[in-house]
Image 1 (cartoon, rainbow, N blue to C red):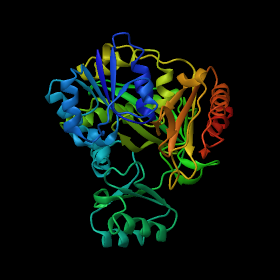
Image 2 (cartoon, rainbow, N blue to C red):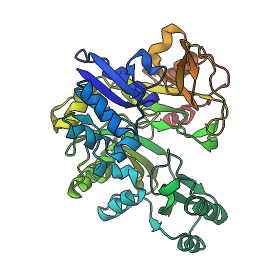
Image 3 (spheres, one colour):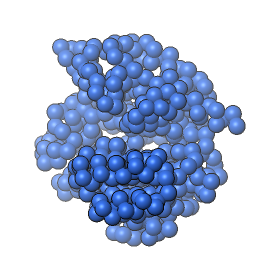
Image 4 (cartoon, helix red, strand yellow):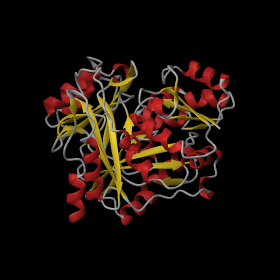
Length: 422
């Protein structure tokens, strides 16, 4: 089988490595891929949002199955375009990907179908939003409606911060058209949990839960990033909470999307807050999370391609989805200065014996040498029968990797360890 994977980050590298385990897979194309993914797939310099070129390439190469991993091409209709040419895909069509593409849509869906989430108001007029903030409780959360590279959410501690956030989105257009409409919502408290799930539009099968570390600095300080590391499973996500989430959130969401004529197939990501009043949805993503994928997929024992095809065919209920009873930790090695300004082009040295544990996110090939090309450069993942062991092994491997301007957090998994002791 010839497989096409759209995207070029650490998440895509993790997906590709798992797909390679299926003996039926003869070739994998990554569009565009990156310098590290090139060791596991044929990288083709076609951008993830260049849907006409992606379709043309897939047809010309006789691709048997496509995996569209990032949010942008999903929202733009990459799955629709590929399926119209007879190429089956993993991922939702555009009318279902809107669950991530529009926060207003997602919030209104939850309100209509009584899915627990934070209270909110929607604004298209900046002055009305600013007036609302005069009496809104703080802290408060300001969200740009559309996609914003994971950065369109601001937690404002004061009314002044909240008003500045609104002006930056609606007046200064820091997120472009994504800020034409905004959501102002209640600030929730409690442990956060990420739950990725496979779904064929009828059945939903949650994967192992995970805990992300968004802030750039140790102790959850500094700016928000795309994620500096993850652990799985998340110790706060107990069997009782999982059952409650299935009944109150997961199945109701899948059923709501179907009822709206937007049947969701692929990977639906639930970003949850375990509040004192029960689990609530912070956000939906229409795809695998990054770097959650880098700890969840290494724990998957069943064949990934078989599961993906089942979501496409509608046979997920009859398909085995089994995970190891183990723990995983992923440490992100970044370029110093990320998520703002950083230098790139530095040679990367990775010992050969750990390459199977390394997922390449931001690296390119230059004169036969892997060099840094992004903010998040590599993810290093270890699996162990206990969380402490997974954390220790991930950091031990990370320490053997060298590149100038290398930066990482030193406390990935610390909160999870503490929670596990309670």
